[in-house]
Image (cartoon, rainbow, N blue to C red):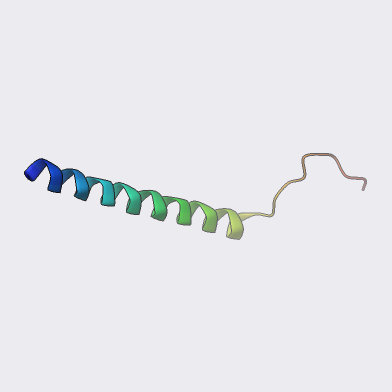
Amino acid sequence: MWLIVLSDQLRIVALVSRYLTNKLIRRELVLGQRPKLPFPTAP
């Protein structure tokens, strides 16, 4: 019974951690700099 409860809690923590990490990374990318084009542009 403890193993089931513990594994469920660990899964929830992992999902929340992954969500928060992705949210912070996306926020930093949006606020930090504009995307670079994969090809050179004419001046």
